[in-house]
Amino acid sequence: MKTKFTDLIDVEYPIIMAPMFLVSNVEMIKAALDSGITGAIPALNYRTDEEFRHAIDEIRMYTDKPFGINLIVNKSNLKYSKQLETCLEKKVDFIITSLGSPKECIDRCKPLGIKVFCDVVDLKYAKIVESLGADAVIAVNNEAGGHAGNVSPMDLVKNLNDNIQIPIISAGGIANSEDIKKHISYGAAAVSVGTVFIASEEAGVSKDYKQALVDYGEEDIVRTTKMSGSALTVINTPYVQTIGTEANWLEKLMHQNKWLKKYIKMIIAFRGLKAIENAANKATYKTVWVAGPVIGKITSIRPLSMIAKDLTLNL
Image: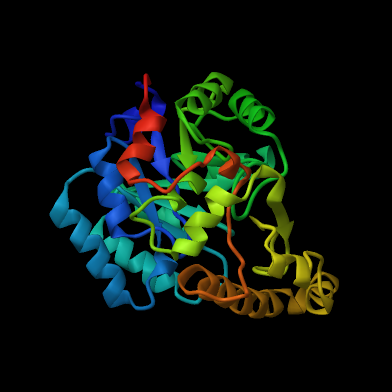
């Protein structure tokens, strides 16, 4: 399948394995690239710059196929500047920006030929990043896992397609090749797929987390603002039911006081992401598992190559 995206990135299929916090790893990227798709890893999955550099080098030694890095570009990511420097030095193929202004990233990547794709949830922000020189937008819809948008896949992609010129990568609600064809028919040039890859043998999370994607269904997905300060889509486990999904006193204070907002959001994000990390990597009653509604289509834990085969079938 040839699209604007495959022209932009030399890849066989217009599919990005989405960067997933704590989940994505080098082995997943290798398997994705072997399957004819591309993928990205969040820089925040690595505690040190040395570990981050080693991961990029390991993939480069394995293949010359294109892959990317996800950067959180707002002020809550204290490692952003160093992570960007490493991406520039290593000349990664593309960067996906999230949760902030991508201006610096775009300005510094463009002279090096590094593509920048920006997460957007609406037309307003899509126009802004297009004006800044983004190479594509990742249209995060209301069926995405993690930080989801509020607009349906069809409405979001069609609205963007009518109003911007750069390629649109649709993110959310994709489990197989039929889903991909549907999103392409809306006007997307590619798709970003996350949740189904969590249930892969290569995914870097606990067996309990993977099995939860098999055992729970679409109706078990809820949004919570308790983990990162922004709405996060998670499985409604007994622990999530216990702590609730509504704003606590700290979050309410954050929304009332603009001066304190940045600092409070950093506290919430640190505290919440630490809870998610514990749940993802070891057995704990505090189970906070990030996922999207497509878990209803997941029936088993499989090798990543088999999941990719379902996505690329007849494309």
